[in-house]
Length: 181
Image (cartoon, rainbow, N blue to C red; front, top):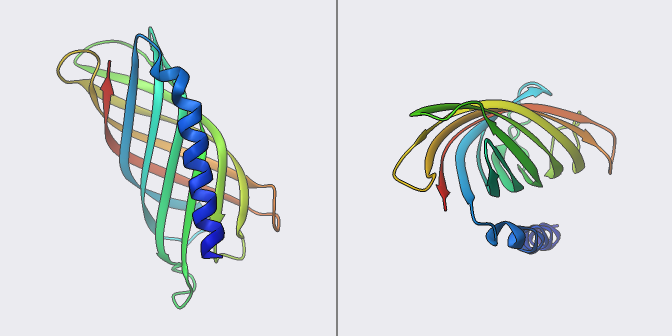
């Protein structure tokens, strides 16, 4: 099982590197990293999980668009404290729309992708989940060339497509930095 997880994560990294090549060639772009926490809405009782997400986007006016890679870490499931840890890896795409430029700029965000979840929760088992997310945030420009600090909250809805059927819904809150060029 551990070898499968390592192979899966390496595959996601390779696909991500291949997918971001076009964004690197853009005249304007941004690399964004968020550190945060995710808390389950459904099934209840999963507790708060640390997370890290990153995306590489090209920027066109108020829009930014690109691939996104994320990892969610956990301890043992809080509903079953004597079980093994859970984790998830996600690969998808994200679109942000900045509503106005200024010192503080609000933005909306929409994401879609796939999650590979190693789970101990019977209501949302191990397997591949397809996902959609919707959220909002605020950013502040720092320095030149579009670099920003960001705070963002997103609601994620996941629907299982392999393994047993199940769903997950969680809220992710992150703070990060966007390095623009």
